[in-house]
Image 1 (cartoon, rainbow, N blue to C red):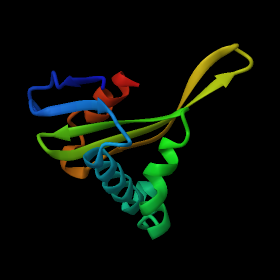
Image 2: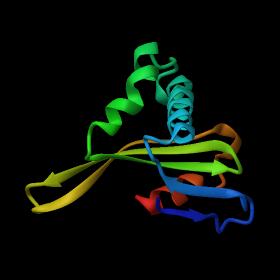
Image 3: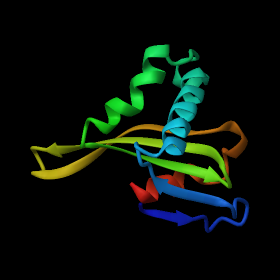
Image 4: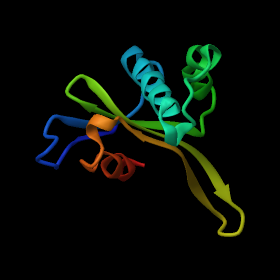
Length: 120
């Protein structure tokens, strides 16, 4: 698993890592964070459906081009980036579609998103 610790003195306990969809802690963190994002006005203001909550991680794991990055402050999940690898025909090169970027309100303004994107 690729990971690194925070260089930000405001969040010294921050750990950024690629999500392991088969790790129960990562799986529950991913659903919790994506649901928090969905409930936020920026994410549409509504909770994920029960179907999405129960099938999301399994479906992401079934798509080898999908990957996620998580941020933990100690044991608390605080940030998520979901990505889909693709291919640019014009550039004839791989690309990454950054699909979701979410940071809990308690950790916004602390460069958590920037640190997660550095791992993308």
